[in-house]
Image: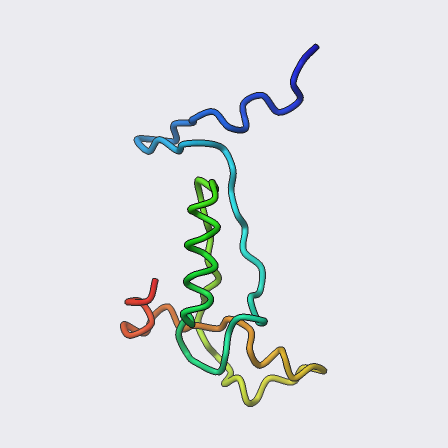
Length: 97
């Protein structure tokens, strides 16, 4: 009997980096944790820290360049204004990463 994903929890080397397993967390929008701040909130940072502590070898965080102010987002839902839109070029935001 074979195990379907037998290598999932085994280490892997990519270049000169060794990952403890092969689990990657691809982030989605954390609008339910983010307020109107232009930087990741404490709740968002805690969320990503817990994902890493619970076993994901790679955790990706949303980021980008804020082109349109949140107030001007033309979205059908008010929650869209809380989408993570942190300006990764802003040094004050980079400190949170």
